[in-house]
Length: 260
Ligand SMILES: Cc1cc2nc3c(=O)[nH]c(=O)nc-3n(C[C@H](O)[C@H](O)[C@H](O)COP(=O)(O)OP(=O)(O)OC[C@H]3O[C@@H](n4cnc5c(N)ncnc54)[C@H](O)[C@@H]3O)c2cc1C
Image (tube, rainbow, N blue to C red; front, side):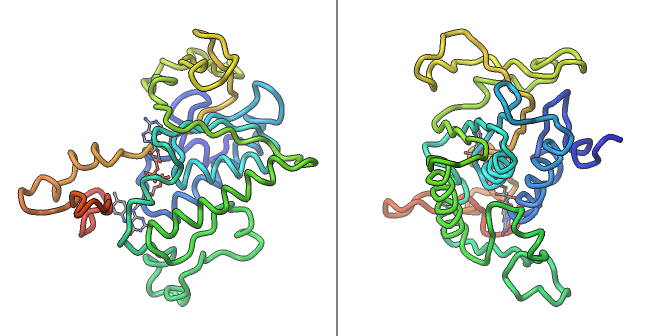
């Protein structure tokens, strides 16, 4: 029977998108990315072993969470991030409080500020969210990622490897248009073209890499969001404040944008 989570996020054969469906909140993205990563493993669409790995586009909360969830099941994961660091977008939200329970009123856990999951389920989500500013949350996520890297480097680590390539525009590697990736539904892998040699020492120029599935977690980049936000088009709206006194300000508008 087809997996419903995968069916919901599938955009083409072995390609899944976490941003097409209404993205909602950080919590939604963490839960959704965990479910998709687990479903890919459960359905054996990605597996341990060369050429059975997962390619993740975007190292935001969703992308990194999915990568770590799949790796904990032994799958090798490659993540492409356009910025020099993961969680870059969240880290710009210096003043916006992000609360995993903010939309849960009037449920009793509304004020708890913690993931409303049973402990047995919560441990499956690699990135733990709690009430904090976006920037602080990005720091906490970064800490978890650093710990994960240390574990990965440890002798005896039996999970999959997560290879994070920063300053790499995923669009150069994967044409996201339909039919640009793989033509048949029988294919068990996707050949991803792109300048891999610029990221991997020893990789041959022009040679594609093979993945068993691709998960796109590329949300609107701040500049693109700016263009589409009604608030941002106001001449004095200050929806996306410019840096003041050399400090970087948040990428979020002051009020909920029309998209949410
Ligand atoms: C105006 C606004 C206000 C919001 N307020 C809240 C709130 O108060 N609370 C809450 O929980 N949620 C809020 N959200 C939603 C929340 O920001 C998102 O759900 C969450 O950040 C999505 O995480 P993500 O990992 O999917 O995407 P992002 O955090 O956007 O991560 C995407 C990553 O992909 C990278 N990327 C982009 N393009 C490329 C490319 N071409 N190649 C490689 N990498 C690329 C980016 O650099 C980024 O690291 C808000 C959203 C908006 C737009």
